[in-house]
Length: 136
Image (cartoon, rainbow, N blue to C red; front, side, top):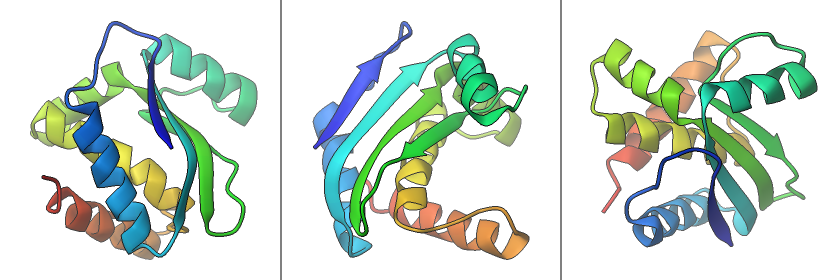
């Protein structure tokens, strides 16, 4: 089950379509959908989590807490809408595209993809692009 929660003045358009897209991604990656919670928030909210739980005193666009059991995906994915807005400007892409990239990035981590090395980051980016192109 995928749920969308809001800790800021933002509402995701077409929740049902986005949920279906995420579910299809999970299935394509040979994983099973468990409980996935997307929490949309602002920079301050996410910064506090970053400091408290990860000991990182920086701004970020996404933090995910993975509670998956094997191939059954469970977790909480926090997304700073403010960071997504800024990143979309920095990368010269539409807000919606950047938002969907971050949304799918979180679930791809749960599917086993990493992004710490250059090679892993390239593989992650290729997967993001693949699934972005499969949106309805």
